[in-house]
Image (cartoon, rainbow over all chains, first blue to last red; front, side, top):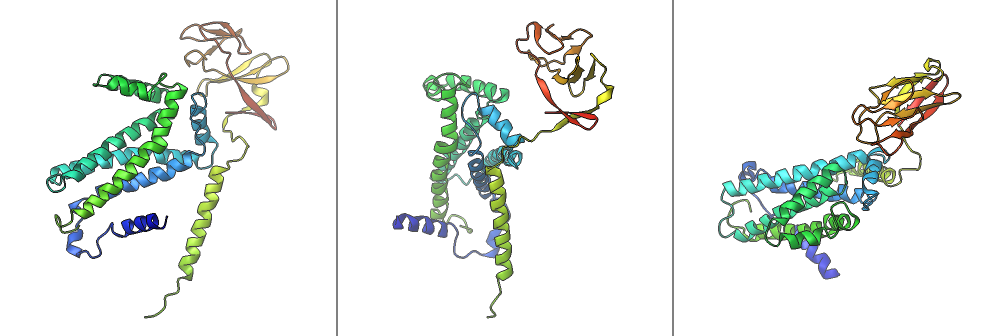
Length: 212
Length: 130
């Protein structure tokens, strides 16, 4: 346990360089897009952790529990909408971050591994947003997921994936629980691990840019 | 170097933490009482005997029977059109569902009766809650 504590502590300590030159802190290097996206991600974890206490992932209670959060829980509407809006902002920021990396050629050697990790994070974030979209189980959620699953089925091996995600039917208990588990546990954990790798690689590839 | 007193900063942090904890507690333990919103208020004596006041905008009819007053939602239980109130019954203009004055289905395609809304007496006013 001691060792892991040290690992996390050292990891956080080494996220930032010990010394930076003032002229290298120009905003236009990165526009802080990645950092802002990560901040949105932290906000999503925080609000999501609060919402878990009230949301009920069963087909007949899901929508009612959303209404309960919106109308009965003090501040519930605020937390829920913060979660919803932050998820939109999160995706926008990630896309802008990708665009910035693309336009400045930051994906080139020696940072191609980090580009691949970042692309993985982009895909995971999209999937995370998609699984979260079903959870309120209103009409919008139901039909959007229906459309998405039909799209997925047209891909090679898409039918297999579809059968894994939706064993019964969309909006039925089993598929809702699968989406729920993916949304609150599996995908966020994968994203956190990939994020750590992403940040580790940024620091590891220092020497490429003055501010690293 | 002069020693900086941080007691004010610590105090403010403590206040913020306490407030945050209080808010968290309120969020996690919302209480049993159902909070309801007032949909509309009606003067009691404006409702005619065996008649009804129709509020098209709020989609509610306040109906006085022989000796009771109740509020009926005018949202058709079939597909959500606003039901028209006639002298004898309530008719949906979209697909022709017919309900009696108590809200029960006389003729489909609607299958469920029109829901009743809670009515509360406050002095000489009636308040319809949602």
